[in-house]
Image (cartoon, rainbow, N blue to C red; front, side, top):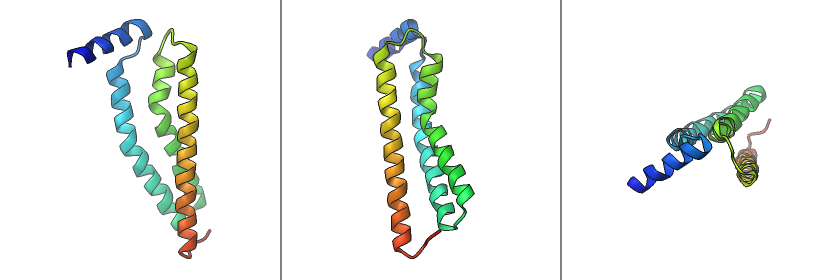
Length: 114
């Protein structure tokens, strides 16, 4: 545990990032993200297109919250950090869209269409 506190202190000193805040944001994000995706799929099944788009947009905002903290609070971040964050964002978008489209195709196969 002491090794982690040393890493946290180094991150705080060099990049002005509190790793505990980032970790908390990340862990909390996971729960809320899946709750929002559940509501988006539920509204899709009810044929509420506007509400589905609102929930899907909320999932994107919640999904990017830890990375937004990193970009806004971080100082002196090397360029490769921004590249890795960009890759994470793109992979996250891909995974969400793939899952959402998969669920939508499953529901349309079950006779639910918009």
